[in-house]
Length: 275
Length: 154
Ligand SMILES: Cc1cc2nc3c(=O)[nH]c(=O)nc-3n(C[C@H](O)[C@H](O)[C@H](O)COP(=O)(O)OP(=O)(O)OC[C@H]3O[C@@H](n4cnc5c(N)ncnc54)[C@H](O)[C@@H]3O)c2cc1C
Ligand code: FES
Ligand code: FES
Image 1 (cartoon, protein in one colour):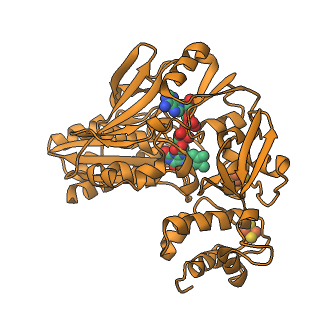
Image 2 (cartoon, rainbow over the protein chains, first blue to last red):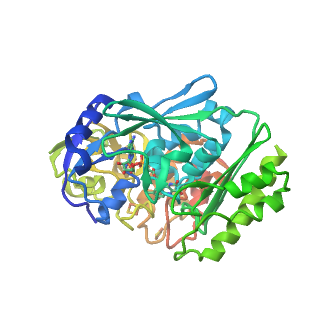
């Protein structure tokens, strides 16, 4: 399988990437690690006329201490996040979720920005970033804006990114003392989650992000409300399938996903609560 | 477009379409057919090579993404014509292959794993090779070979 033909452009800086996006608009697709886009192009589910390679924007590959948050460049690869000391000590939930992405080969190439910009409800990272209350920095043709994770994911494979926008940075609040848990259920090694749950308990406030439980990455408002109303882990987890509409596919029916969400959220709340 | 890649220490330069996958660049343009295509859908790891020293699936990269960079394939691993790389030797000694189709990718992934985790546990090896499928061996002897190459008891 090979992709359909396209014109190839390489950007050597964020400015150049933005200029190329401005020139080609919705004809073009950005290529970061390529581990979502290239498979889609091989299956001919994506046929961009122009591919703008941003994979070598090393100025957008970094993990910096931003005071109350970690600032992570959009082109930072999964592997670099997984093993980073700052991420491990300040937002261990993100390190854990990242270490669950695919396999080592995938993590050597895929980037955090690509995983988020893709907007896939089955991806592990959006759920963790939702639970962590991260914000995304989007640089458009007229400058940068910050969008909360809640507002970033807008639909199935749809995000707040416009056709000529570049995701440049992910800001993740530091939560060194928080309780956390990342629960992923899949049938085979390297697979995507059939259902997953990211749980963060920080200073009495609880964040719960769900993987593959709706058409977009979501937080479970029902569980979060139950926990803040004083419910036990198992009582709160009982509402994990409320307010969301999980898909049915080869791997799982709707009912099975609802069941998995309740089980995984309970395990997640229990594990996070023990910290 | 002209794509220059350092492959196994040799400068390769070929005019290819931008949509050419790295694995086809290696096999068809460079004539290095040791790297296999198994699934062609990023799952099996048969196409694993080292890109700037790290294991990657060459069916999920474009050749243009490797322009100006370094790739090592299974052909570039052994120190000489008559000697095997320690990982290849360990696969040989532990009988870690049957049909051999997964072996080039398996060996490349295993070498990359030991670079990152020099003294792995059996669990580390199984997790570290989760991107590589083998239809024949049941993995047991592959894990044994990697542990033996790492110097642990197998
Ligand atoms: C075999 C396999 C298994 C996988 N398993 C998992 C898994 O278990 N869990 C999981 O979460 N993920 C998994 N993934 C996906 C992996 O995480 C990808 O790395 C990730 O989804 C995409 O990142 P990328 O850098 O490769 O993006 P690309 O494929 O390069 O891009 C993805 C999309 O985002 C856009 N984009 C990329 N960067 C930017 C940017 N900076 N600004 C704006 N738009 C941008 C692109 O235009 C494209 O539309 C798997 C992938 C493979 C191939
Ligand atoms: S051929 Fe590349 S992963 Fe199977
Ligand atoms: S030895 Fe046959 S696939 Fe692994």
